[in-house]
Image 1 (cartoon, rainbow, N blue to C red):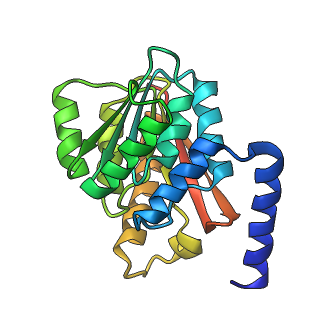
Image 2 (cartoon, rainbow, N blue to C red):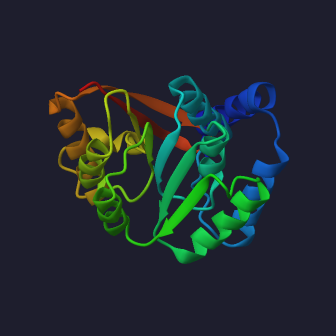
Length: 223
């Protein structure tokens, strides 16, 4: 870790201690994820709280999440739901899903969270058959399928739906049009699709911190 990254992490820690603060349920979720050998790629605490605040500001009653991992971001999002709210989270790995379910149960959120295990595109196709719609969609799954995930997100949206993609800057590599990394090329395609889509008003931000250098893309469905 270089000096710049150390400073990013220290700033994250400062923000965390003052504005996010320690939370036993979320701390235990991260501990359980580590004990189960899950990759440490959860959103940072300040980013998790940002998702919570966005869901609260939106007044989201139905949330779709792609990429459960150990349920850390799932808990943040589910806590923003009203009493009759619902969150559907899609996860490929059954081991990850099992860990996430235990974390969600411990958080007291099992009544409003449903984890669906399997290939995301297969799960999305089944949701499409049920004519599901969501107020907020958070996409943090494999990056190669980001263009496909956007198409489904639009299908599940109404005017006012907020769509968020994580990991869209890729440590700045997103500007490399000649990259041989399929995740980068797929995310570049995602940006191009968002830019051309008349149903969306969008922007993206770069993020730095304990999780490194990356970013979020935000798109609001307007018609």
